[in-house]
Image (tube, rainbow, N blue to C red; front, top):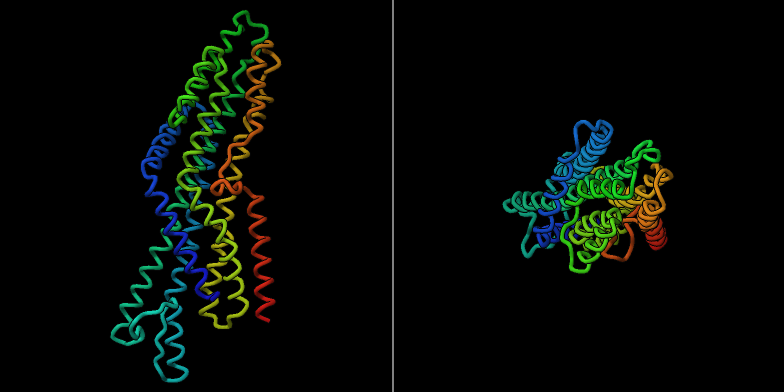
Length: 359
């Protein structure tokens, strides 16, 4: 049971992830276009922002390559294990014992020498399809989270510079000038808004007349994250639920199995289970912390050089930033590093129970 649980779980997870992306293909395309347009709007003269964006993009590439390497190692280990077992058994006993990578029931003799090569290649193809069915959507999620985080960092940068140095002593430091600066910040980030519903549109107009533009800016950013969640939340829920099973089953197999050719594939599965859910929770945590960082940016700005009306606008945004932008597992749980610790705790509980039953 524990032998095929990780493989079966990975197949279901990959199917749901691919289905979610294809089901919301129009939203995914729209999100990619919006984030690409926003990223291209970063001015090259702003060296600090350019370097910050490069840092996170290089980290994204490293994470993607590491995840791909883990997938390839696991799939390759499962592919080579039957050949190694067959060769070792032949040199030991002189008999040819055909083995397949996965335990699958067929209505015919799959170990017939005439059929076995085709079944072997079919299982290898299925393994690669399942592997990249998980890898592709996960890379899409990590990429979108990275670009959204960069936009939050850019927003923090703009918020810190919203009040010009020495504006307190300038004659043109009026409420209208401050509102104009707010309008400029919002225009830079407005493309993050996917669609404006009727209720939000009325709110936006009201804020325009009152010059509370920064509060509507959070709506743009939150809408972009909600769009990403609409695409991935159901698959994320299954990922969170099955990660404990993958980690538990793979760890139990490593403890029980004695054959080295069988230990290597499940060691890759265990590493995959730990790393994949960690990166998912890590990027979800980055979205939360970067959105809350907007409040810190307001606090670090020259808000004390503005008037009472301007401080009221900044205070509203500061209070709004206390409610973080977040990704969830279909609304059941927030995706952050706390969720990762709970998953590890659940995995250990399952492992201890399974080990006790086995003994």
